Image (cartoon, rainbow, N blue to C red):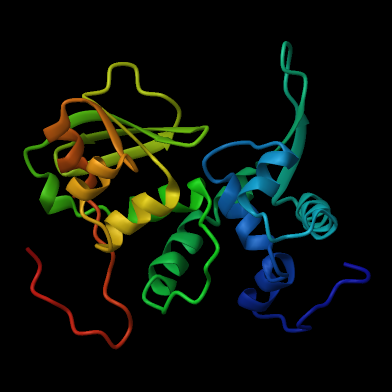
Length: 225
């Protein structure tokens, strides 16, 4: 890897960090876990990364076989970036890192990307709260659409619209994060218009309540409800 920093250590951790340890590299992987994206979509998800640095990370990740670039067929005909099979192997690594990091204090005032929120929701899903629950839901976060299927204490949460959702939840990333963190109450956000619900309102509010953020490191753990 000419011109790139290396730990010069044969350990697998060090060799992995040689590939994805540069700033923004793992966040590029995060943004592609839910499917291919155009450069403009990637930059929208990582707005504080300069376009030059983002382009450099993409070139490096492509050279290393973590991502690939391909052209979509007609009528779209645009170029997108996507993870390779080897790149997708990083998903459990990022999931564990996300769970570990979610207990650290929040020091940034920037808004999370929609994809990072959805990935976090997968990990913050409380399965026992969904026992006996079955339903289909659609989340609308700006221009992004995500489909959730809940059944038998499990959840599938992926990109795309739901065909016949029991409830459609429309809001923004910051508001939904606030609900998960317990900073907002669903009734208040509905009255203010920051959240709108279509379909079965009871099902929609119960769906939102299926996600609970863990306590911060050093914070006392309350007895779960």
